Amino acid sequence: MKISKVAVLDTALRYLPKWTSHYINLAALAAAITSVNAVFLAAPRELLALSEEKMIPHRLAQYNPKRQSFPLAMAVISLAGCGMTFLNLNPDLWGMFCVAGLMGANFILSIGTLRLFKLFPEQVSSAPFAIKKWWVYPSCALSALFALAFTAMAMFFCKPLLIVILALIAAALFLSRKSSTTPGKL
View 1 (cartoon, rainbow, N blue to C red):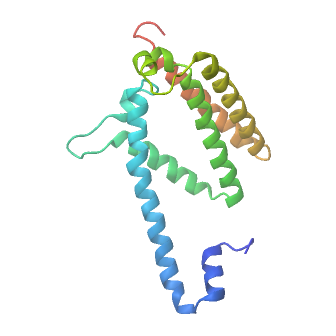
View 2: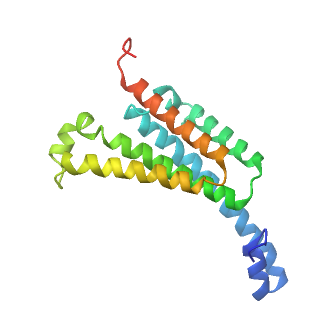
View 3: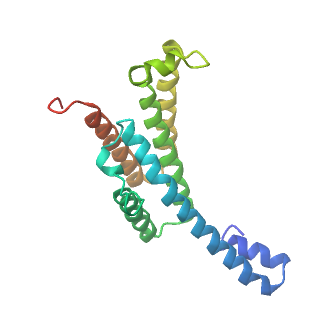
């Protein structure tokens, strides 16, 4: 099964009749379509939330009331998805890329948490669980450090993708810094 390109189908056909392969293929197609639909529903809203928090430029998450969608965010996500699909990388490399992306997102979240006390002082003071700076800052620093270390470890065998991930993190931090400054004070 390790060398199989369609492990689910090959595994099912070991135990099920051959005629079930059509249903398994149909189920796999339906799963892929629902995953794409989930991306188009969730990712633009994530970008909207990030733009409301001034983490990314607001233009990226502009809402079109006529179509009830986020056209620029959906275009960016579509182009990124299509571009990555056309790379036709092997599954192990995609797995490393996903792990590095998740760890990169964890790094950005950790850095963003450092601004929690500045951006939301009322919510922090009225939180049901007392949030103290003396444990948030070291936790964020350790989380960011471990996220970057794990990203580097996951991407060790594919240095070009490591460079891409680090460039994306740097771009996200730059955009975060730029969108949080006042106009005229860059």
